[in-house]
Length: 382
Image 1 (cartoon, rainbow, N blue to C red):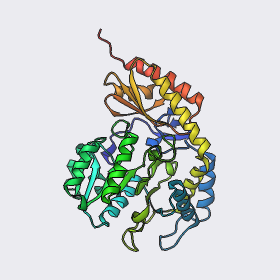
Image 2 (cartoon, rainbow, N blue to C red):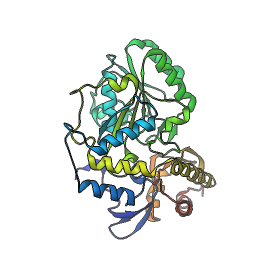
Image 3 (spheres, rainbow, N blue to C red):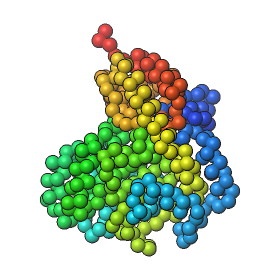
């Protein structure tokens, strides 16, 4: 394998629920869920059943034809958006979903795209061009042009940037929570202000729900809390519960911009992946999402009691544990020694994004393990 990931510390061979097992038989409580992908954990019976039945019936059909799982899933996502004008194009990943959104923006006839500093939208050339992290972008320059960046959360700066040339501004991109930067939520007011700004100038509001969607933040989409509907929504990760799938959803005029031949993807809308996603939507209903909210509140409250923790930010089961010492990477390594999988998006932040099926008992175990880990990595003045 190429060296782009470095040498992995573990080889994972199996799992059950919120636990993973490595090649030596050691069990780990998984608080990362494949970076918010395994929404229903590992080997969830609904997903296993749906995938087995679908792969034994129809595993692939080209996009020259329709398949029932894809049509059903598109209808259900339309219902989740709550707008009859919504239309869906499926892909294999969040990066591809954001590529589709980028193309939709270009099809407005306008050329400027505004994206947030420190945002993350994927690793393909188009999605990387939207990513506000020079350390990831610069080595691949030149990237697709026309993208300008604004400070996340600063509506005054964004308005001034738009008003430089509003008639050539196609879209404003953002994540409702910047996950890869350290789990930094946008305020509801910021989302509402962007919606109003986009309405004022006929700009597409594009919300990247790749990490935050499918119930992770305590509502099906994170933007729901602000009481707005974007023009374009991108999603992936938890939608397939481990199967590769992404979706770009357009509403209103954005739903009609693609025409036959303007975009495509060989495996987008694959019947097996769509069957898995339909199984996910069967499980993640309103009652389930209410449970995500309550479990997230418990987790955050218990984490806030720990001496190494400055504060906890995020929503639902996407939490950024902000430490009062820059020892997050050490905590990740020590976590593995204690049968715990977490992630460090920055030096002083531990990200927690467990399977949404994590139980109250699992959270109690997690807090015990995290307490031990934080005590080990805390640096004293002695």
